[in-house]
Structure formats: structure tokens, C-alpha cells
Length: 119
Image (cartoon, rainbow, N blue to C red; front, side, top):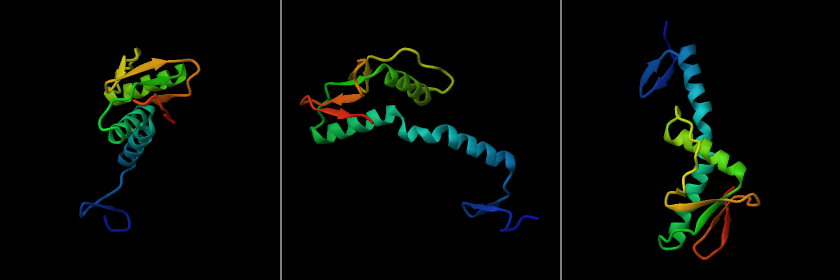
């Protein structure tokens, strides 16, 4: 019997929990929850903040270490299409050039030359 003790309410409708449905939901949540903190989104957030602070001017570039390049490629695969692994870094992130430097901790170089840490 379905009652409030063994059901969850969703949009005013009581739905019986099922192990398969709950497991699927938890799998999706675990797989994509990290997207909120990916390097891709951090770079996008820094770019957006730069636009707001500098009257829509683009920063000079993003500078990534090889490890961050690999993380960016992984994030790019998640953002574009989870079935396709991106293996080549694009020249630009949302119009901003991307440079790879072994010694870089990962920065965005602002229009005025100021370096802003990505992480």
C-alpha cells in the first residue's frame, strides 16, 4: 500500500520510491555534480567577472599548466558531449586565447596584465 510513510511527494503527487529509480538519480547526481566546480566553469566565471569589471573587455589570455590542460579537456568532454572524448585543446575559451606553460599555476591574464588565479 502506498502512503506518506513509504512515498516521496513530487509536485503534489505521491510517488513510490524504487531502488532502480533512486540508484539512477544518485548515479546522475554523482556523475554531474562536479560540473559546478570544473575548471571549464571556473574559467567561464572568471571571464564573466572580467567582463563586468572591465566594461566587456576581453582578458589577454588563459595560461594553463599541462595538468590543467588535461583537466580542461576532460571538462570540455563533459560539457560538449559525454560520449565523445575531446583530445585537442581549442585555441580559445569563449574567445580568449589559451596558452600552455609548464610553470603556470593556472591564471587568467586580465586586459591590464593582472594575473587572476583560476583555482
